[in-house]
Length: 231
Image (cartoon, rainbow, N blue to C red; front, side, top):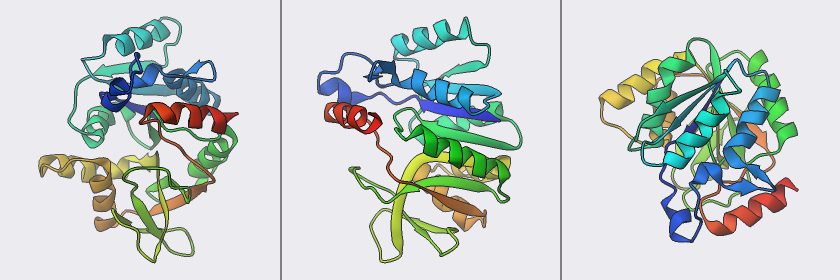
């Protein structure tokens, strides 16, 4: 199975708060954040890991190219994009057919939970298995409504009575999502949350998979939170 990493953001908030390295190269408990994802994906049977980074952060590009010297399963795409959905679009041809797992570079989760998530994703039928959590520590969370069978029925910017979870930034999908993605781009949409809404509107069968806790690293203070969580 292929994996994708969205690492094309500018990380401007971290830079403004004094973090000298680009977001993908932030170290958590002695391990570079993007290296951690690559390691975990390899431990979960990655055939190839496709990474997109922008053309502004030379440090990140150089780091990944160094990794490629000893790891032939890493593919790098360099392009500055206006949103994570556009980054996904730039990756999607490389992800091929069948199932794949896509994450943002700053998604922090427990490795044992991720292993079980991938096992269930490989076995499931349907169009996607998306990570969700009821732990909310995000400035603008995407709330998710799901029925008793954890079938996703909607994505919302505001909390509602039927939204018990938020998106965790881990997307297990199949190539059946690509026509929706391509149409979103053609119609001038942006942001992953709008793509996710369109998948529901298009009738794709999406399931939610609960993680106990998922964190994002958007601010300098989040680094300590993430390190404590992983410890």
